Image (cartoon, rainbow over all chains, first blue to last red; front, side, top):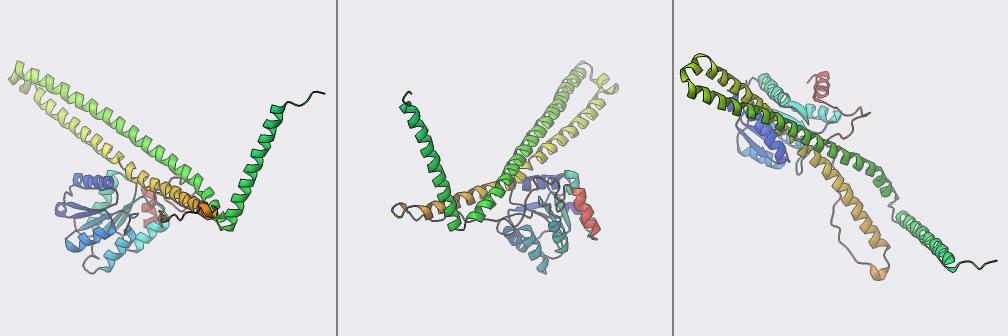
Length: 129
Length: 213
């Protein structure tokens, strides 16, 4: 069932989007789309159907915190799990992400096992796996 | 008493002149900075330059580590690949020589298992090579900060030049750079002694767990 889940990967660096996409594919989640900032991500989320968002924080136009806030304010999107994958390592950022409703927080650089563990943990918690 | 050497006198006098000119320029710059209220900004630059230096060191370290990691993984993947190549050649010869014996003695089955194992190892090396490319994202964020600092200093120096130039030389130059101050810190280039940041994923997990998340 979880193999049919659709992911949206949001990061301003194409290299990182490819890495996350490949790792998700290796973990059995082949259906993924990409967005290079929060604005594009929000457009895609509103125009298409997704089950999971993996988002960076430090991005131009709309950062990850703003995107998270917009998702949680939107009745149609607020159920979506948002996993933050970021280089922001300040404790206050981690706490803020959790308080705003992030489903998880991964600090870069990360390993394949970490991403896989967090995604599976979130999916299990939400009954999606 | 011999007359002083004229060239020595000239050289000494020129050195005093240069020294006085540098002194005058320094005073003029100091007064101009004060007059323009830029002293605090210069102090900020001075504070940020060592930070820029440690950011550049971070970039050098991360790119160096990534290159090292990739080369090591390629070496190991190539060794696995050589093994597959050699074994394929060997099993081919055995099959040509005596196909029944090759199967009956387990050579073919062993070959299949060995190749499967080697292929998995190669796949792991390829994943590690892919993961090593994360330096692009991390260093890119740090480079952006250093570029911003350089651009800010450049712009303010240009403004200083414009405002202190004699009227006949003054040319109005439009600002080409809007100062960008990121609200976010980006990668931690030096976490030593900084209790406000985490240094690995387990610290993130511990922090969130302590808050009940």
